[in-house]
Each structure stands twice: as structure tokens, then as C-alpha cells.
Image (cartoon, rainbow, N blue to C red; front, side):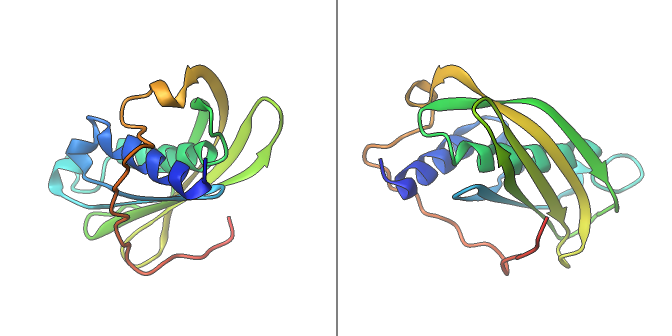
Length: 163
């Protein structure tokens, strides 16, 4: 299987997840990295008028998860632990999370992710451990290799940062 085909199948799997009907994210997967972006809406806010921490967690975990998954072509990966740091509130524009694999061994992936606001300021970061499950990717709904015709949506200006 070609890497690009695997990345596109992962993108398709992500967009097929029912929870993403709520967030309407865009995703781009590449080797050891994933970028996820959403436009902000009031439905993501807590009562003080800023984005709820659960949205930060979702963005950070999802970007980290798909960075790890980009390197595993046979099995679905699982988050075993994930730590989130929220460093700045946000209430308008967009959020973009970038996940990058920083270490791999025979049993786990260590991944870091950073989330930015619409002005490319860091607003949170996280790190987590991911492991291979026993579930084959080909058995996961949405992971489609044959006849894949997925439009890779364009993001706002790319963010190139060292984690």
C-alpha cells in the first residue's frame, strides 16, 4: 500500500466518525504528522464565552492520534494516556492542531501536539502514548482504500513549528 493511499484512508476514517458531524473538521495526514482544523462556533463555548476545554482535548488528541496512525498501516491505534495543557482562551476564528510523533518503539508511539488560534498563537499543547490494538484497520468503518476519491481540503496558511 502506498503511503498517500494510507493517509487518505485515515482522513476518510476521521471524517466518517459521527462526532465529526458536530465539529466539521478538516484533516491532513502525512508521515508522522497530522493537522486538524475547525472553525469556531458558540456551540463549543462554556458559559464564560470561550471554547470549552473538551474541544482543546479533542483537537490535540485527534491530531496526535492520526500522527501515530500514519505510521501504522495494519492495525488501529489506541490512546492509552493523553495530557492536555490549555494555555490561552479562544472565542473566535479557528483552531488548528498539529500532532507529531516524537518517539516510536516496538509497543508504543509517543506523540506531541500543539493547538493554535486563528492568529497562529499557541493556545494549548498535549502529549500522549498510543499503542496498536488488535483491530485491523481494514475492519474499521470509514477506512477505505479501494476507489478512494477523497478531496484533501486546503488549510489556512501552514504552520511550521518545532514542538
